[in-house]
Image 1 (cartoon, rainbow, N blue to C red):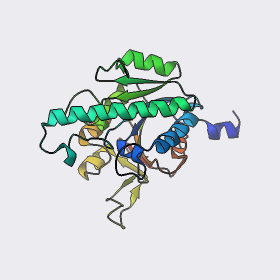
Image 2: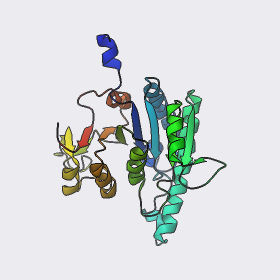
Image 3: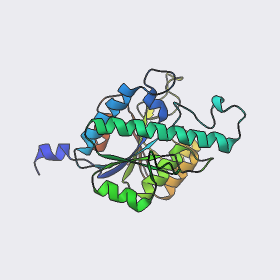
Length: 248
């Protein structure tokens, strides 16, 4: 293999990309910015063109979140189910954006909604990935009290992904919230245990624990910087923060 080919070769062959619902808002305060969805789709298309098998878990916080103020004093289970429906809406938006770029997709939902999505069946998801389709997982785990972070960890393990790519609006994992603390420093690498002990807001504790117990690496990176998904997939140094069992 030539040096150029090596430089362009992906570091991972099967990935799970965790997209927050807020990422699809763009500069809006609510809802979906279709231009953002199409920009993300173009980046996913470029990664997919390398032969990488791509699965996506999308959140619903841009529309409704079960633990948000908009839920008010609703029953937590009811509020969480509404949040799951919001993730289905976002999944269909991403499906449309991806298919407009020529990428074949399938939406698999943990809640049965056959007019919009196939039911989640692990073997079916694996088959879609093997056939070169981008798989979008919707409706979280299908259970209340579990976030889409937990769904991302669960689905990544079920499909035997090599890594979870956690797309955020900051450069990685920091010692404090960089939006509030100018002295916050970014970690290049951090362990699951440190994330839990320092209560760093990478993913919720359940998701981090699940990844730690099963040695599933996580890379947290800034999705707003064009080309970062490709940089992470190629294993470029200095992009984002890697969360794993031991520091490398």
